[in-house]
Length: 438
Image (tube, rainbow, N blue to C red):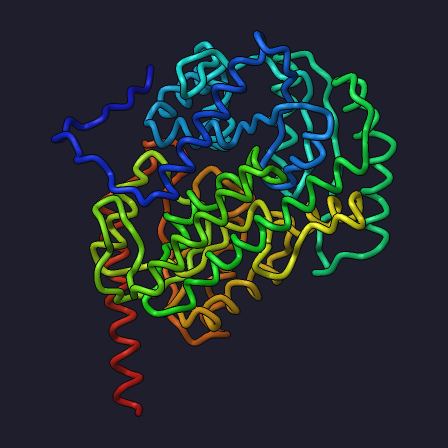
């Protein structure tokens, strides 16, 4: 029997309100897709890679254009085209339990591999996997290698099981960069590696990273001028994708920082799709990715209740800059290794628990909310244990909701809304108990 996804007919939603930085980010992404799809005409070569461990500064040294399959799946989710792609992948033989980013990508290829601008994606010239804790990434690239028959490069990143980066780990990765990754990128691109060019790219990265951290940490203020989860998706887009190490990234994050500082000076909260959020009632830390197929509806469940996310783990999958990491141009290969080692998906459960607990304290949050993703084992494994431990350490209430990345079949609006309302009541009861004890 063929499964059918039925989208309920509803009145057309009014156009979402976006602040200027969101509009700017959308324009940057559109220009990048135009560059990607024009590659057959311009002669540029394409490298496909992933967000965690994205070595954009290195990729640019060879004149390669970066295409990220995760980002394409997210774009399809936001456009509500991913559901049909997921079904297509399942029809080919992929299990319901497989990561829906993967199935959206595989289904998109089967349906013509059309980019968000309506033009066909070019085939990649090289697949670069900087493995960072997600086993699915390896299987995903095996499928892409089978499809495209192109050069495939693996940069193995040791897992931070003991919670620290050692010299042996860094040396191991630098050896791979020197002996495997860089020579193969030279071979594919026809461009000789220039370490000074890499240093210049890294210098530009640091400037953007500094401004991003200032934006994220603005949420320590009351009211928070940003939402660090839903709004944060827009903020991390350029630096986690194809723009880190570019002048465009520097310009964007300077623009974003100034915009946020202006909202902070005026005492304003986040901009939501319906305009300014209004009164801030609840401050949350969120663990796990969002749902993209009902992104606006999901976000509305929060801001309708006056809930703002002040910190999130998902906005650290492409780098933990707010914990102090910066790319180091003086040690270019070593810093690429340390970057890959430190991303959120390569951190152990105790490290994740420490991070979430500190966020609750530093951002004066009311508690932890976990959005457990059905098809993402990299995030979902151990989340109930994490929830209990964070509750124990902080004394703040935690809650658990479930959805999926880009499969609309696993977004139950009524169920999520009920759980959120119950959670907000739990927070109120905790506050009341605190006032009574005082």
